[in-house]
Image (cartoon, rainbow, N blue to C red; front, side):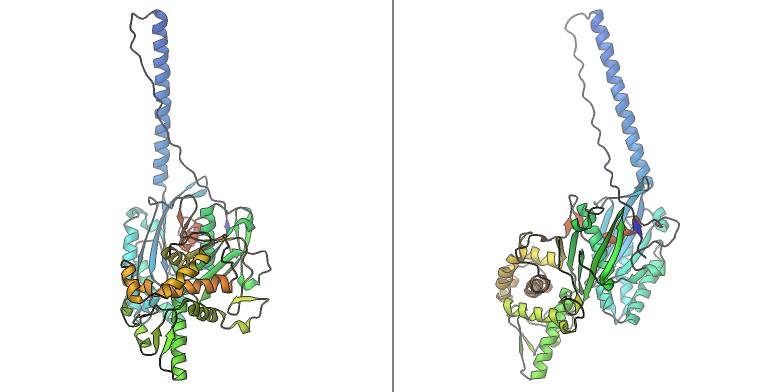
Length: 485
């Protein structure tokens, strides 16, 4: 059941400025009229000062009351490449939640690796979760801990694990959260669906842009490239099969949203699949060594592989002897496109853009986030028309020697340097070749924040907003409604 959401209210407190005044010393003996004028001026000035001071006191009182009624909420985002804690402070005015995602009322911290990296050692997950809990506790008054809820929401990295393994890791995190001092229930640590993740990302994007509560077709869609999955979420005017459709309400407006998470199509997971496909090809044909067009020439597969935060390539040393790095953007693009089209022959819908999954034609404006953003930012592309710029940038990068890339980008981790050839080609294959976005389409921009207040485009913020506006949201300990809970 989807909760009904009231329109949010953001209030900006007024700033007061003192009113200047001047008293001029008379040059001659004052007359009666002059004395009366001075008395009147002083009276008016004192009156203004009194009003100003009263307003200041009222304003201070309002601020004090607001601070006294601050509420706190904590969400731990257990992603594929790392786990990030978000600490939110907010308050209510006239029954409406007031949010401030600035430094004063919002903080976050990310630790690597992700919880899915502890599949063989679930107890190891307690270390990072404990550190994140301690970070949150330092930002919330001790007296408010028992009234502040904490939730752990795991995403695609955990979705890739077998359910029994998921539960083993979650049980470890629940033990930590139960003893944290926060308000917590076991069902608040869970693996969320990819569809929910997409909806939350859509909510925070449109909240930041101020488009919630407006015409559904005026909202902005989200395409997100994570480590283990990719999400596509937007309002479509096409008929959408019910398994891909979600409906939420905001104020008096209802939104029917297409939302789907393409599991195993995130940047790291897709690269792992491609390398495994190439390795299997080498083994089955007996050719010995097969070229890897998505890795710069000269890269050695077992170098620092155990240090990779994503966990997907932690065992890449086994690729040595069967693959040879031979960076080539065009060949990498062809290989990644083939990866995206696997299973398309099983499509049971009118059309499928990626695999056998229904995807309506993209319409309206879109924000490309996560690894779309990081890749475009690395290549210093313009925010509009960036797809057309990515092709020549990718060609240059893929064709460069690994030894030269290390020298050219000395401050960039080798894990990321190793992946930019792949991600540049993969992005073009996904957004242009598969989803049909024109290379010069300026309606799609890459971003990691949005709006005049530069609010971070993190799905956890959308989950927090949805929770805060839910009518059952209170301090009574009653379970609050997230999508899928």
